[in-house]
Image (cartoon, rainbow, N blue to C red; front, side, top):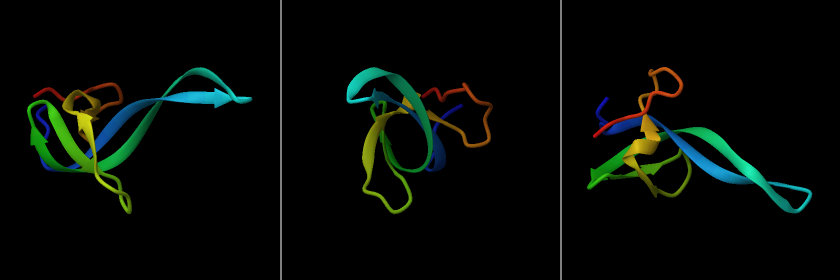
Length: 72
C-alpha cells in the first residue's frame, strides 16, 4: 500500500511506566490525517492536536487489516 494524503492509522511505540519505573514498550494505534509526505517521513496530526512527524512505515490504511503497514 502506498501512503496518500488523508486519513491513516499511525502505529507508535511508547514506554509504559508502572509504579514510577520503565517497564516495557507499548504499541499504540491512533487515527491521524496525513498532511505531507517527503523522503520516507510524513507530517501527520491527530484531531485537535499539533502536527508531528513520523516514518511512513509507521502508517497504514484505516481499512487495512491489523499488522499491515504501508510501503512507499
